[in-house]
Image (cartoon, rainbow, N blue to C red; front, side, top):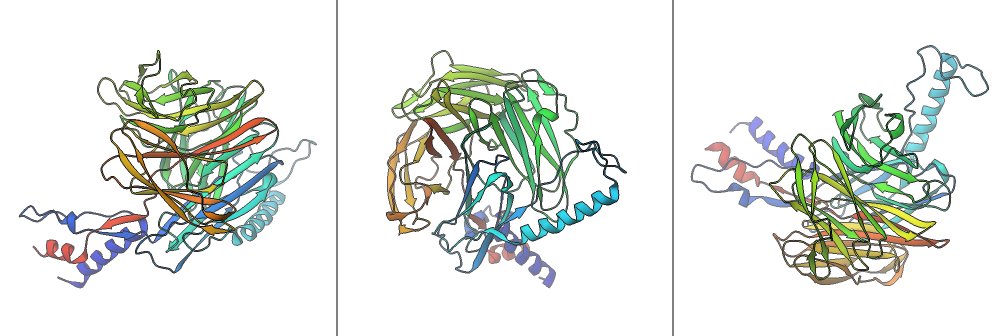
Length: 525
C-alpha cells in the first residue's frame, strides 16, 4: 500500500473524531461486518451559536456553559464564546445614498462607509474578548449581560472541552412586549431548520435569528407555510449573512399575510448558520422556539408542564403527501388519547394547528404522534400557556430527537427546575447526574425506571453544598429503548408564572470510528 492511501485513512479517522461523522468501510467478501471493530472516541471539536438575547433595555441575560466528563477525553483543550456583531437586514438603501434619517438629512456614501468601518473596528474589538470562558469538564460556569446590547455568541470547544458541550441562554424581561422568561439551548450550525408554531398575527412579533460562524458569507432562503400552503414572501430568498455575524429577520416584513400558525423553513444554500425563532406576544409574553427535529412519521414532544392551562399543537407536512396522525398523551399511568382529538389530518405542504386545552390535567405529560394510516414525514411543536387572565405566560416545545446515549442541560436551580422523562415504546432505566454548582458543591446521581408509555417528572438529585446553578446529564441505560427528555425552568414575577422549556437530544459527544487496521485489511483485499 502506498503512502497516499495511508494518509487518506489517517485523515478520515482524524476528521471523524473532530466533526462527529465517520464513514463505514465495506464488509469483506466473507460477510464479516467491519463496523463491529469500530472504536467509540470522543469528538475533538464542537461549535455552538447563541442568538442575540433581547432588544429590551429591561433584559437580564445569563449564559451557562457545561461539558460533561467523558471517558477517554483528554484533559487539555479549551472553550470560549465570543460576540458576533449584529448586521442590518435593511436592503432599501441605494448604492449612492443611505436611508434618510427622521430629521430629513441625507447621508452620503463616503460618510456611511467611514461609519461602517468604525463600527467594524468596534465589532472586532468586542468579538476579540470572550464573553464566557468555560472551566474544566464537570464544572459549569456562568456569565451575564444586561439590556438590549447582549450579543449573539459564536462558541468553539476543543479537546477535552468538546464532547457534549452545552450552553444555556436564559433571559428575564420584566415588562413590555415579550416579557417573561426566555430560554434557549445554544445550537450547532446546520444547513436546514424547521420551525412550526411561528406567527405573523397582529399581536405577535416573531424574528428568525440567523448566525454565521464561518469566515465566508452564508446565503439562505426563508420559506413560510400556512394553512393553505406556501405563503408568498417578498424578500425571503437569497438572504446573505456576513461572516462572523448575526441577522435578526422580522417575519412580518417578509409577507403581508396575517396568520396565527405558520411554519418557517430555513434552507441554507451556501455555508451554514445557527437558527432560532424569538416569538414575542403582546399579552402572553415571549420565548424562543428551537427547531423541530427532522421530518419523521413518529414524533415526541416531551415535558408539557403539568399546570398548563392551554396547549396548541402545530404540525407541518413537507412535500405533497398528506399525513394522518394518531395523537396520544404519555401520562404517568400510560398512553391516553385526548378526548375529541384521536387523529389529526395534515394536508401535504400545509400547516395545521389544533387546541388541546389543559390536556395534562395536573399531571406530567408528553405528546406522542404516530402514523394512523401509513407513515408520512411531519415536523411539530406545541405552544404552552401557564396562568390565567392577565397573568399568563407562554413557551414552546418542539418535537425532539431522543436522548440517545447521553444529553445534558445546564442553568438549573435548586428549586426552579423540572426534568421530564418519557419512554413511549418500552420500559427504560435512566441515570441522571447533577453536576457541581457554578459556585461550588458535590455532584450527585440517581437512577430511575421509566415505564413504557409513561412520562415522569422525576425528583432530581441536588448537589450537596450547592452554590449557584448546576447541570443535569441524562444517560439512557437501556440500549434500544428510546427515551425523550425536557427541562422546565420557572420563575414568578409579579404573579406571572414565567417559564421556559428546553429539550435534551443526544449530545453527539462520541463517534464510532473504524479501527485503522480494519480499514487497511479491507483496502488490501
